[in-house]
Length: 64
Image (tube, rainbow, N blue to C red; front, top):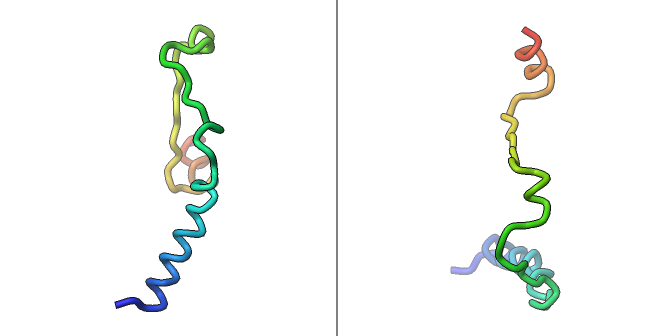
């Protein structure tokens, strides 16, 4: 059964995906496989994720 909510979700999903569908495939070429030039200068890439705490809680925990 199609309801207004389902129709709105389908329409919203279509409108969000539409710009991605409009891009031609050649505009984003895939890079060639192999090591990159920047790998010599940056041997380790570190990624940090912050939890859901706010700045005041984090500063209190680090300063203590």
